[in-house]
Image (cartoon, rainbow, N blue to C red; front, top):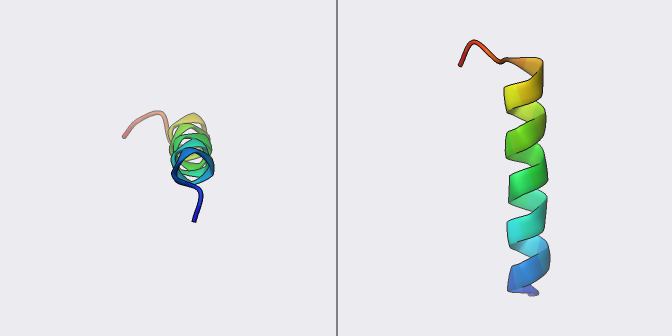
Length: 24
C-alpha cells in the first residue's frame, strides 16, 4: 500500500470530520 496516499486520505477524512463537527 502507498503510505503517502494513506496518510493523505486520513488527513482529508480528519479535516472533513472537523469541518462538519467543529465542536469536537
